[in-house]
Length: 565
Image (cartoon, rainbow, N blue to C red; front, side, top):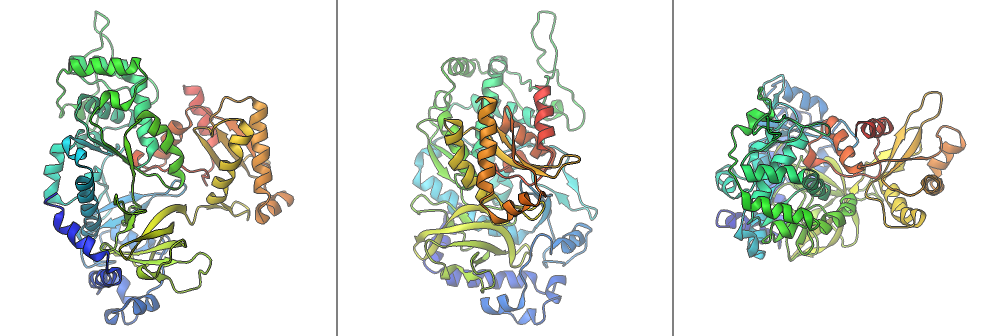
C-alpha cells in the first residue's frame, strides 16, 4: 500500500480535474512520438499543443492502418512510432480475428501502472481482508516458446504481474499463491493442474483474480475432474499433471502406484518446468480436498479466508458470472475495468458506480455511434447515459487508435466519467452483406433460448458461420443442452425468424445468398471453445466468450472433439 500510495493520491486528485489531466497526458504522448516516422507524415506535428489541434491534424487509426509501421518495428527499424525503443511485443487477438502485435515501451508500461497502482491501493484499502493472505492473479500458459521478431525483439510477457512496477514484482512474488513459472508449461491442462496444486495447498488464500469468469469455472471443473489424483499428489508431495484433453503422463510402478515424476523432461517440457518448483507433502490439505469433493466442491470449503473474486462482469462475460458464483457462494465479486493490450481504459473503484476512466494513463476520445462524422468528444465532455466508442492515444505510439470497444456512461466519480463496457463496436459478421452484429445476436439469444428450450439459458450458446460445399453459407447455433432434437430444431427456427427481422439478413436470405440457421448440440462447449481459441493463438486467460464468432470451422471442431472424448 505504501508503494502505491503516491500514484493513488495523484489519480484521486486528477478525478476532480479530468480536462487538466488529459491535457497533461496529451503533452507527454506528443513528446514521446515527436521526430518519428509517423510524426513526419503529419504536417506541423511538432507544433501541436491542444486537443483540438491534435484532432484536426492526426487521422484516426485502426489495426489495419498501423500494420506497416508494426511490421517495420518487428524488423528492427527504430523510431517508427516512438522515440523510445520497443521492449517487447504483446500478441493480441479478438475472438474472431488474427493476432495483432502491440509494441510495448517503457512509457506505455508507465501508463498502465498509473491505473494499476490506484486500483491496487483501493483494493487493499477498501477490503482489508484481502491483505490477510496470499492471492492468485491469472496466469495462463504461453503454449509456445517465447519468440522474437526478425529484428530480435521479444514477443510476449510471462504473466499479468509483468504490468506492475519492476521494483514491486519481488514483493508481489512473495504474496502470490502460484509461481509465475507455471506459464512456461506447454499445455493448458498441465498448467491448470499445477495451478490447482498450489492453490489447494494454500489454505490462507484471500483473493482470486482472473479475467473471464469462465477461466475460473474451468479451473474448478478441472479440480473436480482430477481431484482424487491431485489429493494423492498433495499427500505424497509430488505433482503429475494430466496430458491435454486426452490421456495422461506417466505410468505405474510394480505396486500399481503412479511414478512420482514420470513426466518427459525435454527442453520446455513439463518435467523441466516442474523441476524448478518445490512440492512438499501436504496430507492435511489432501484430506480437506477429499472432503470438499464429497460435499460438492464449494470454494469456501477449501479456502475459508477467501474474501474477493475479481473478474470481468460486463457484456458477454456477464453470462459466465453465475456459474462462477455458484462455485464460490458467499464470496464477494468485483468487476474488472476495461483493459486492452493496447492500453487501460477504466479501473474499478469500490465507491464508484462503474469502472472509472483511467484519466492519468492515456489520452482518450469518444466517438458517438449515431454521429460518426462528428468530432469525437473528450473525457470531460461525455454525457451520462450515452454510449460511445473509444479512441486511444498512448506513449506506446498508437495515436487516435480505434480499439473497437463500446462503453456507456453510468455516472461520474467526482468529475470523471464512469464507463460500463457494452461489447465490441466492430463485432459484425458480413458473409454476403447480411451485416449481422454480435449485439443483435446476444439480445436475441437472451430472449428466445429460455422460452424455446423451457428452462434456464444453456451454459454454452454461440452462433457462427459455416461454409458447405455446393450450398450457400449459413449460420449455425451451437448449444450445450440435453433437450430433445425437436426443441433444438425449434431454437434454430426461432433464431432464423428473429434474424430475418433485420433488413440486410432477410434480403440475403430472400436472394438465396444465405442458407437457413441450423443447430448443433455440443458437450463441454466452453472448454472446447477455449481449446480452439488457444489453437488459433490466443492465451487462455485472454479468451472472451462470444455469442457471435465470425470464424467458420466450428462444426468440424466440435464434432472432432466429441469423438475424441
